Length: 295
Image (cartoon, rainbow, N blue to C red; front, side, top):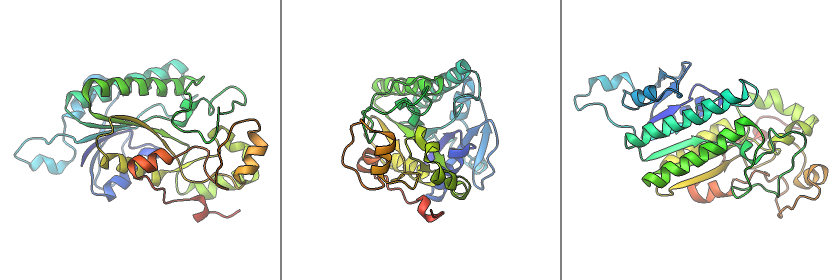
């Protein structure tokens, strides 16, 4: 597919684009910084500028397209990852402004150019645990897509607002728009760097509900969504299968979640349920911290 990808120079995006290229997609990266990846062109553009989003949506995806005589081909899908990526990087209102206006502009341009598949990055933070004041527990475990989304911070608020925006665009058009509630992204080199500390002090992972997503598996999830048509508007949790600490499910429940209703779960089954992604789009995580570090 010919794919326009915003935010592909970032931590999550660069691995997702690499996966899509490996699977044979043609990808144009839209970002404020260049991506050094063979076979991928980057257009420097600002998602909060509607005019720039309309321009890139109508542009070339690579220099090879300059030689075509039939005009610029249309994009078949848009993947929107560009954003202020977390709390406390900018002022709260700037984070909210960039993320909400940017998402509106990207989806609006995609829809008006007839792109019938849009995949956008939402967040684990929508559930209100990650950036809450104090120790906020989930309503139940594992957290699935039906869990209430009432966060306290501007970053997560922007992600909830973006889901409402996306649902409205889908209702208007009937196109496929899928939101990915992405858990904490881990790059391959980070297992050896970060996970020993998680094993020594599991408290470090409480705000991420002790879960994670390998950046390469996130790329697979994007590809699964590109390959699955006809779902309309959907949101999916995106996580790996196991906890990001060495404690078992029962040990974590006893230490951190006493009184929280919990279903019967496997000994290391993630608290950030990925069952919907598996059943609806065929997501199947391939990577695990067990492949990189030992306790």
